[in-house]
Figure (cartoon, rainbow, N blue to C red):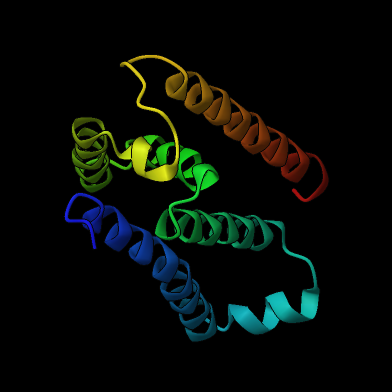
Length: 148
């Protein structure tokens, strides 16, 4: 294994395992509060559906990063920029990982040409983050209009 890509591959493996651990913890917490039976008998519960969708996206991101796919690189960069809002631990992890990606030109291992700073990739990341924010706002609006 290439020593430069080894930390990225390990991070991809962690991103693959994280949704399973998180969903297990959430289900255990809901079951301990007696809320799991209520959710299962009531049917569709929007916040849990949104949580499940985000976990599926995280799992797909991990698979793309672990397999060094081009789309995995874009999802990974979006994940790191969103993670930066998770102060203080998420901010530090995101900053260190982004610095590593920039320093070692990790995009070349994902089958892309090396970009000078501030081109191509940043535009795609900004567009993806914008779409993520719009999707979140639409989901929040739907939830407020129909479920509250």
